[in-house]
Length: 264
Image 1 (cartoon, rainbow, N blue to C red):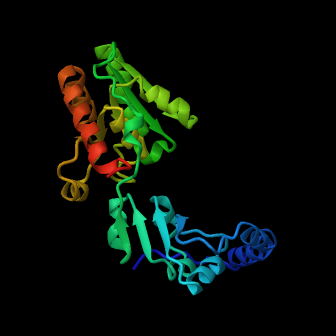
Image 2 (image 1 turned 120 degrees about the vertical axis):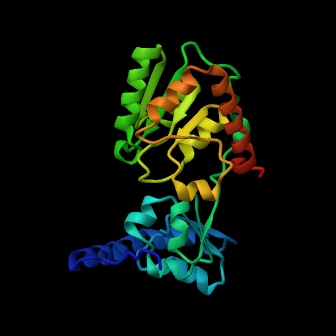
């Protein structure tokens, strides 16, 4: 059974009941203005609709409209599904493999991406550049990654780029300057996400922590499998072998094209 969201206290229950009542004065006119009951297929982000009582999706279900939801990780792990919404969903999708056993109607979807929009550099930069981007240092194990990057700056003369909470266009511009991308070593949110998909599309050699379950699920993945204990050694191997960076980058690009591209 999936984790279930329910109000934990009387105050929380009262808050959402009041919020649903208050919001309806703006939501219902917007539904009518934009004819939101007249579409063919509906997609929810993170299992959320306008109301916690699920009134909007209930109306859709009464009209036999197919409703889909995509879960991205924290929404499912930390909050859980909202029963009033979940009961009306025909399909749930996720790009987080570890969530699959926790819901009987949850299916894996490789994150879709316009791979053709990115053009690999084709050769290592001078100096070789390593990049790591995050919105949560804890979830990514960023302190370990930063320490390894700084150590290699001193020992091997590489350039290390750390990106935190920056606008997306700036993040993409910085990633394009890199040869190696490190996603995460914490295994809090296992595997990889959109940061890595973008990096693979750019042809970067990509590193992340792939636990045993992920390894079994996608054994042909292109990642350099890293942990807090072996990260520095794995990065040194890449930095000292530029041809290996190119080979890993080409494999990453092929993976992005075959699994994540919009045309797949």
